[in-house]
Image (cartoon, rainbow, N blue to C red):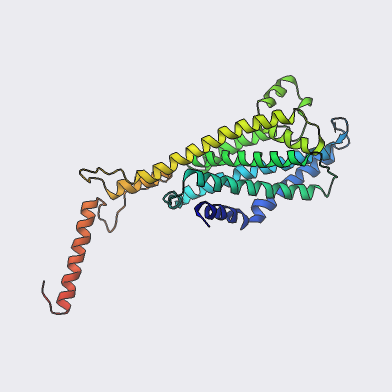
Amino acid sequence: MTGWQTLFYKEVLRFWKVSFQTVGAPVLTAVLYLLIFGHVLQDHVKVYDRIGYTTFLVPGLVMMSMLQNAFANSSSSLIMSKVMGNLVFLLLTPLSYMNWFVAYVGASVIRGLVVGLGVFAVSALFTSISFVAPLWILVFAVMGAALMGTLGLIAGLWAEKFDQLAAFQNFVVMPMTFLSGVFYSIHSLPAFWQGVSHLNPFFYMIDGFRYGFFGQSDTSPWLSLGIVGIVGKRQRLSGMNRAWNKGSEAHFGALQIDDDTHGGSVSDASNGMFEGAGIHVGAIEANGVNSDSNQFIERIERSGAESNDELGQRHGVGR
């Protein structure tokens, strides 16, 4: 396998090793939503005058689960690597920013699709679901998961600690998801909230995805496709730019040593390298010795000389 394929395989394996948590738990949560809301509103709400509420709910829950898990996959992987300190080893590899982007976002898409299939399979046990336009379903599923995987990549590179990532998810991703028409048709909302929903890109992902099941939606699927494509392109450019900047900081932060004087220190280089990865470390000290490169080299030479003296005395040989 090449570099990006290895990283992609590592990211897929990372969530699959704990699939009970990363796949099983989201499926269970979505099914609970389906059972509770469906039981309460099935006999009271008809959508598009012909679709039962439980049936209407299934595509929204499938898409919501895909979006949230695609975001969580890339963002959690990056923030854990930064906090644990092993991200720097990836940054020092010869992988390009495009390799990073493809590996992380590709793994996020895989996780999103796996969770979505799980939610759909279990939901099919409780209601009958038909496919009117399967191609639209596939297009919006892949584009939505890729967009949220890219957003997770951006959030993971931006956040320095878990609190910042949790705030991003709780105050950005979650409100936009619940205001996107997962549990209702936006035509049932007041005019003001309809306008707000039309500014929400999550709405177009879910609405276009739902069109593939029912052949009917709140907006044209072509409009949804155009908006999701535009937003996705901007996210992709932003994500690759952040990956490029982070990689450049890590690769070149360790090389900021004056070529004329060679006055830089090992601690300067290492700090530049680790801070490029979002990891803050103090100056490197070994046995109480300052990590300035000249002093460090002198100490190594002195230790080598002392070892040679001891070896010579042991064998009766003077310096």
